Image (tube, rainbow, N blue to C red; front, top):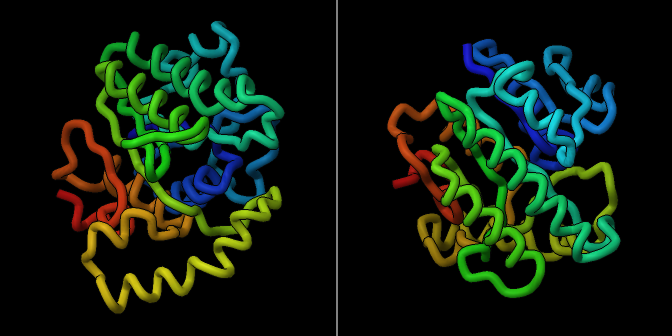
Length: 232
């Protein structure tokens, strides 16, 4: 039985991770939350732990009170919601970095899976530069890792994001239809193709828990993220 911990479980990808882990009997899973009871509608098995990423005492609980063989990090916010660039960077970089630092001190070292973003490999602007920095912290940590770089995420958020709704309505379905029927294996076309949050969660769990050939540390994006069985 593996122990899985989710950071960012109330977000779009995080909620899908909870849903999909609920159906599995080969793992125990814990969600780090700001307040208890937020995930009861999704899972009767998830253990919710109230957690402050800025608290050294809470971080010390990882690997001791909170068993962790694999941490799935789906933390993220927007500049508008955060209120300032500094607050945005705290959530998207500071919190993941704190988790990484803690897990890197454990023996044996847990694996760490990070939800990043398409474009993080060649970042421009606050959002992508922050995602790229979080990736660098993870790569340098020595932890076994998986990084996924989705493009526009599709799914029902609890919060309303106008740009994502418009993008999904006007571009996502036509783009995906074209990619599937005109160039089903085009690396270039699939690199920025919109993707369902449920598919991102499925790829994370497949590569982290189910794929016996997924050894070492990897970055998954584009076609391999939409179809992880094709991952090199």
